[in-house]
Image (cartoon, rainbow, N blue to C red; front, side, top):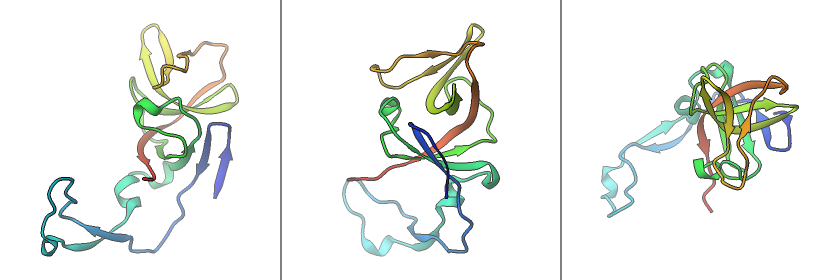
Length: 147
């Protein structure tokens, strides 16, 4: 279900499910030398249980753009956003700024609030009283496709 689409993000809400989850092998997957196959213990894993701490306040949004590539948020990645978390300095936040959603790193100090992109090709945004600005939620996880 799509809740809202802007130029930079598309929001989704988690659907309730009775599914048991995907297969999960608890021993870890070696990125070095392979481990013996008999060491694998098969379980079921629910990504909702792993990634979602507050179901009523959690949403997904798809990234559109390159402003946060330095933080590992690439075009078309799926963000997990928790609206119940308190915004603070250095957190990555989804913000509503002057009619558009954007995702940036929060920079907060006694002199003000800035939205910091993680790509040098994008400008830092200083928030002023003239801005229509709301911190909508905090990014807790990112889900990526591997090509």
